[in-house]
Image 1 (cartoon, one colour):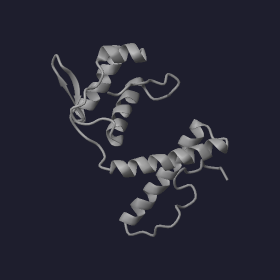
Image 2 (tube, one colour):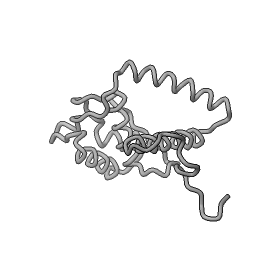
Image 3 (cartoon, rainbow, N blue to C red):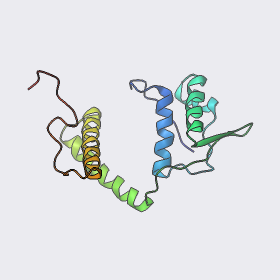
Image 4 (tube, rainbow, N blue to C red):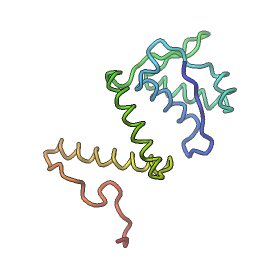
Length: 153
């Protein structure tokens, strides 16, 4: 069973954090179809959130086809995300943990790591789109991922 946590200092709404955790659990193989999610009451108690917050998250997951509510029984995983080999995921996770150790050693904080990862994902997406359109796959143009403001040099 998944153990939810809510980061109060995050700008991401609590319900969206819960949704993201379920989606990540599905992608990583920690959640499988048939697994039961914690009851609304237990999430309210463990995360100190409003029941409406949990219900909103569960409803969004249900509308996306990832969970189903069973009257009187609870909420169960009904869908899947990702199809990566678990061994490949474990190897990549291990490599990422080593990289994160290097980033921490270089003085990067969580927000720095997140910004760096987001920029690499954005650049990679640009490359994939260019490849799909038959355009060259070189480095993105300066500012392609994060355009500069007008007047900035």
